[in-house]
Image 1 (tube, rainbow, N blue to C red):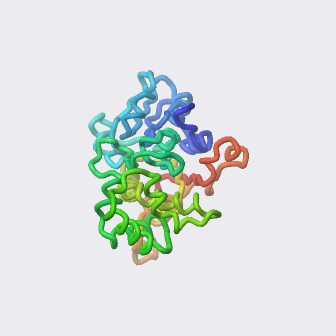
Image 2 (image 1 turned 90 degrees about the horizontal axis):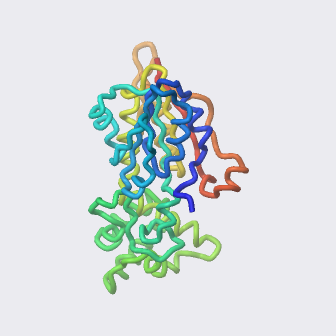
Length: 299
């Protein structure tokens, strides 16, 4: 079984407009699919830095003198590029999805399909796992997370049930949680609702939206004048942040305008939204919700 099938592989790397001697960053290395494609297009003087906080991804390291894998969260992109004496880059690629490997390893607790420990940590060194979220968060906080990150309409009822059940017995596995919430999972929508609940908990565990915001805010200062940003997102919460930041340079509110009505957004959109073809979705079902947005510096 492959570690991960890279989604929108050609399109996302095409978006970087690779220069043979350029410096590029793949902030979500995973199985290395996007990184390998970038390296194919680089000349002998090109350079690729990749980030991945998951120790499992380190097994996929590419033996190439042009390649450096940094085992850290990409929220620290500027710090670690500075450590490698890189101030500006020609392109940055981010594939924000959970890797197939993480979903397929039952003990990681990401999947609703397998019985596994309630973990969901992308960085296995992190202190907070899904178990802590489910068993220690207040009812109010759980309800907020389920509503904001999972878009669960009856989040208050779901949170109340979790709190009531954990008082009887600690909730430790994915199937335990699934069984507890059975009454909220009508047959026709069971997979969809459960996936939304798991998504909400996973986002909280990994601070995914905060990480994305921190990353996006750093990109304008890292890109060269004609540098490219290529971002693949998989759910509306991520995509809204990416779209809004490219459009306004902000995550909420509107940009200020000067006396001449001009605003100062750091990025500008390149091309239109790109989604996978029906053929790609047929081969890789996990590509079905992917959206690719491309940007460059506004000069």
